Length: 156
View 1 (cartoon, rainbow, N blue to C red):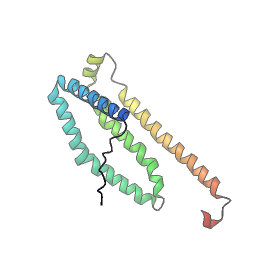
View 2: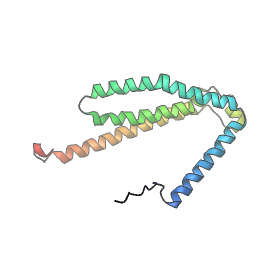
View 3: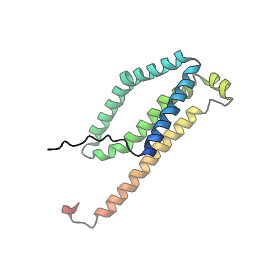
View 4: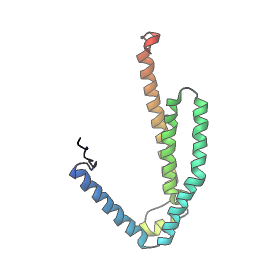
């Protein structure tokens, strides 16, 4: 009896090359990021991880649980709220110092760009995410309603 050979799922050479390039670019960005004030950057990452795991995760897990209970048996509709909310909160978490205006002077001094537009842009992007999700929901609901009108009850 022959033993099957164990094959590693490495992918194509192009995928491996792209993966190696992305690791190299990430390492370069990390070195450049930590070059100046490494303690504040490390403090930001640790603080963001702790804030997410200890405060935000229980909050949005409870909100999601309440949303699923409120919707009831139509649980597929929850994704239309879940996805834009998650993306909006992720953007808020990443860009919070600029959205809140805490580092506006420092950002302006380094980039010569105004930092007072981040809150407005985040709010507009959040509105666009929820609006796009509502539009997709409406289109899919119309398609489902039109597609099931002529069918017998058992085929639905």
